[in-house]
Image (tube, rainbow, N blue to C red; front, side, top):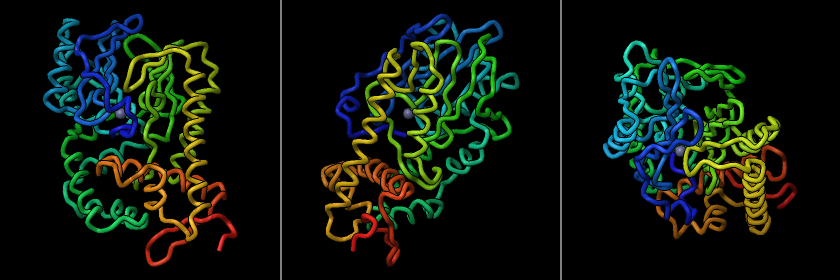
Length: 351
Ligand SMILES: [Zn+2]
């Protein structure tokens, strides 16, 4: 899923290089191109005595597959040298080529995904008809979005869905929170970190943190409410930041899903948390200053300048606005009422 496409850094991201960059002992990063901001997604290769592990696999589009093959070839490898594929979360920029990997790995390969999220992964990416987006359309309608914009959104989401090629479900093995898994000779602990996606995991081994999209260096991950998400994704995201803080890792190397590897994790977590809470304040101010109870769409238009955004960015901005509004509703800071099929938010006690 595209990150917060509103960020100028994301729009100006350079075209990714396909040469693998060694980022740690036995670990390489390959940046693969994306057709949407932030324009590149990282996959990581872990070398090991019993085969290579790939963390995420890119969009599966022709340019991304070419970049993956080129990067592997630079290390003297092909897809068939990979014995494990780990998916950090089920968004298309991270999973869409999983079927290609499964075919190349054959019987000896394993594909790993957060266990409780496997059914939802297959449900989400097996849809092929506009009617399959009914729950998404209902959520948009509840937020105040008009019919024509919803219909255009369905068309766009269907196009995204067709990008994703998943392997047979039986080939995907579950990972669970707290589990230890040996990948390419190194023991990793699995940490469930919902927020950006309900099925998001990070992996930690010693002073290395495979962070997926939970902790990005230059942009804040988009945290949106959509039907497959848990009920309070923004609350989840903040709790998942706290969870990483509580690990008390001593200056780990963070390997993110987008952007360059980095240190100073504590500072980055502080910045991400501050960014979320500032935006929450802005959304609360907007609700408080609106004379009538406000729809999520109206709040989004004010906070994000929604009239000037592309359709894709409007959807991301609305999803994030909904995630904030629902968190504020969840903790009792604002009230929500549904009248004639549209949800409106206001301060408690406001007329
Ligand atoms: Zn991503």
